[in-house]
Image 1: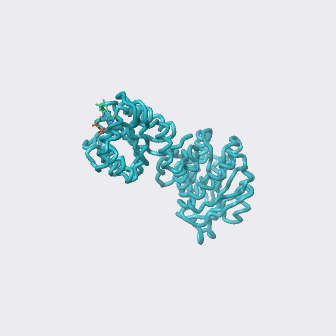
Image 2: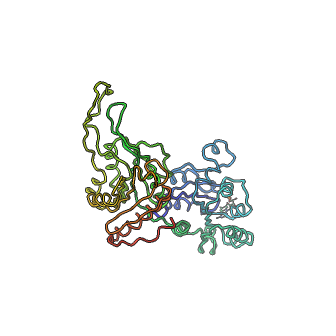
Image 3: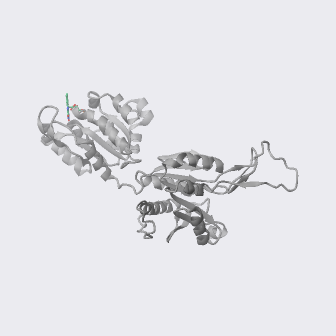
Length: 419
Ligand SMILES: Cc1cc2nc3c(=O)[nH]c(=O)nc-3n(C[C@H](O)[C@H](O)[C@H](O)COP(=O)(O)O)c2cc1C
C-alpha cells in the first residue's frame, strides 16, 4: 500500500554509526510512495557519502548552509517549505542538543527552525549517551515542543554494549510517520481527470471551441491529490497553473484527448471526465485560411468519439464519473447520460441564463452540482469550486469503496460537511 503517496519527507541524516541504515530507510519511504530529499550533517558525511543518498533518493543531497550556489538552487527556507514532514534518522546526541537549543549553525538545524511541519526523530546512540541526563533533558524539551520520537530500540549496539539506543526499524519509522497524516481516502489510487475545452481546427487560424475554463477539473485534481491519489490531468487549452503534484498532459483537439486518455487509461482506477469535449469536428480542417467570399458558408461536421463511453465500454472495471452541463431538465438529461454511458456517477450543473443568475457557470469560481448515481443522488450546494471539488472527491471515494466491495447498490452517503 502506498501509505505516503504525495508526501514529501525531508530526511535529516546525522553523525551516528547508524547512518548506513538511512540508505535502506530512503528505499522503504519511496516504496510507500513518499518523495524524499536528504539533508546531511558534516557528521553524517564521515559515515556515509552523500552520493549514496543521492542515488537512492533520486535528488541532490543538501549539505551546506552558507554556500551561495546551494542556497540559490534550493535554500534552507525553500527546503523547509517543500517538506510535509521532517524526519531525522538517525538523530545523534549532538543533533538533539542542537535542536533543543534552537541552533541554526548547520543546514539541518536551520531548516528545522524555519519549518512549521511535524518533526519526527529517530535517535541512535550508545546506551550511556542516550541515558545521560543532558540527552534525556533535550528529548523531554523537544517532545514537549511537539516532536515525535520514534525509538530508540533496545538490543545489541555497534560498540558491543547491550541496551537502549538502537535506531528503530524502518518499518516502525514508516508506520509512525504514516500516523502523522490522515491517510487520504484515495490513498494509492490513480485518478485520471480530463479538463478544459477542446479546439477543433477549421483552418490554420480558426477553431470551434466552447467556454469551459477548466477550473472545476483543476480543482478536482487538487482535491484528489489532497486525498492521496496519483493524479494525471489531461487538459485542453486553459490559462490555469498546474496544481502541485499533478502530472499534466496538454492536448488541443478531442482526437488528441482521446489518444492521451487511451495512453493513460490502463493504470487508472478512477476516471473523471470534466472536459467539455467538442461533440463534433469539421470533416476537413482546411490547409489554408478560409477566405471571405460567399454570404453563407456551410461547415460539414462529424462526430467525435464519446471518450467517457469508450473508456467504460473498453475498461468496465474503471470507476467512471461524468459531468453534464445542461440548460434545462437537469435530472432527466443527467440520468439518461448515466444510463446510456453505463457509468457510475454523474455530476450535473445548469449552465446558461438560468444558472448565470444563481450558480456560477463555465468561467466562474463558484458552482453548484447535482450528483446522480443509480439509486441515489446528492446536491452539493453553491460554493467555491475548491470546496465543491473536495466534497465531490469525498463522495467519489465513498462510492468507489462500495464499488470495490461489490456493494454499489448501497445508496447511503455519510456526511460530507467536514470537507
Ligand atoms: C565511530 C563513531 C561512531 C559514533 N556513533 C555515534 C552514534 O551512534 N550516535 C551519536 O549520537 N554519536 C555518535 N558518534 C559521535 C558523533 O559522530 C559526533 O557527536 C558528531 O559530532 C555528530 O555530528 P552531527 O550531530 O552534527 O551529525 C560517533 C562517533 C564515532 C567516531
